[in-house]
Image 1 (cartoon, rainbow, N blue to C red):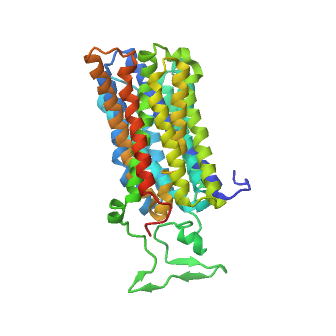
Image 2: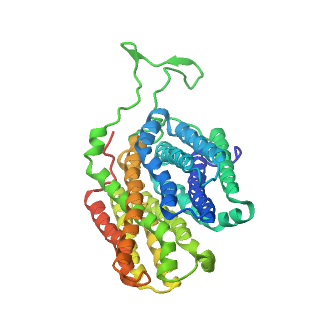
Image 3: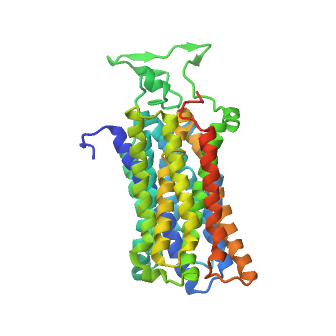
Length: 450
C-alpha cells in the first residue's frame, strides 16, 4: 500500500470508504444475528424492539460530542478510538437474548462509539480533500454505507445459518480490528497548506494546537514566537451561536432529517410491506432485495462526480450545483416514494424503492457535502449537529410508521390494501418536497464560518 503512487488524500478517502462499509456491515449483522436467536426462543416483538433500538439512542447522544472531540483531538485519533471501542464490544459480548440488560448496554456502547465516526470522517475529509474534489470524495465515502448494507444482507444470513450467530460478531470484530490497523499505519494529519486559496477554503488545516517547536525547510529547529508567554497558534473557538442561528446550516439539518427519515423507513418497513402488503416472501425474492442499496452506491458516486465536474469546469457555482443536485434528487425521490403503494407487484415496488433511494443518494451531493462548503474548519461539528437530526429522524420515522400500521389494523383496514400503506410512503415523500424547498431558499455554497 505504501508503494501506491497516488496522492495521500486518495488513500485517506479509500480508507474512509472502507470504514463506512464496515460500520454498516456491523449494523446489518447485529440485526440479522440477534433476530435469528431471538426468534428461536420466542422473544416478543416489544423486547426485540428495545434491543434493536438501543443502538440509535447511543448513536444520537454522541453526534455533537463526536464533532467536538474531532475538532479538539483530531478526527484521525477519534476515528481510531471509536473503531477500537465498538470492535472490542462486538468481540466480548455474547449473543444471548435472555441477558437483556447486557445487550442493551452493549448496543448503547456500540451506538455511542459509532456516533463519533461520521463527524470525525467529515473533519478528516475537510482537512485532506481540496474543494474541487469534495463532492466525489464524500459521495464515495458515504456509498460505503450502502454497499455494506447490501453485502450484509446478502452474505450474513448464510454465515448465521452455517456457523451460528456468534460468528457474525466475531467477523465484525475482526473487520473492525483490521481496519483499525490500516488506519493506524497509513493515516496521518495533513501538511498545512500555505497557498492562500487553499487556506481560505480550510484545506490543509489540522485545526489542532500546534507545537511551538518545529523544523524549517533546512532542518533547523525553530520556535514559534509567543506573546505574553502564550503560543501564537491556538485551536479555534467553536462559534456555537453562529452555528445555531445560521439558516444555511439549518437547511442542511432539515435535509439530513428527511434523508434519514426516508432511508430508515424503507430499510425497516419495506420487508414488512413485501410480506404483508404484497404477500411475498423475502427468501423467494433472492438478490433483488439488494437492488435499492446497490442503486444508492451508483447514484451516490454519480452525484459526486457530476457536482465536481460542474464546479471544476465552472459550469455552475458551488451554490447552484448544490441546489441543483439536492432539488433533483429529493423531488424525484418524493415522486417514487409516493408511487410505491400504487404497485401490487414485487417488480414495481423494487423499481420505485430503487429510484427513491438512488435519487436520495444523488441528493447527498447537495446537502451532505455542504458542511465542508459553509464551515470547512468546523465540518465535524456541523456534521454532528445535522446527523443528530438524522438519527432522531430514524427513531421518529420507524416508530411513527409502526403506529400508523397499528392504527390501520385497529380500524379494521386491510394491511394488504393500498390505503393502509399510503401514509407510510407519502409522509417521507412530502418531507422530501418540503426539504428541497428549504434548501433552495436558504442554502449556500460559500464559506460562512471562519
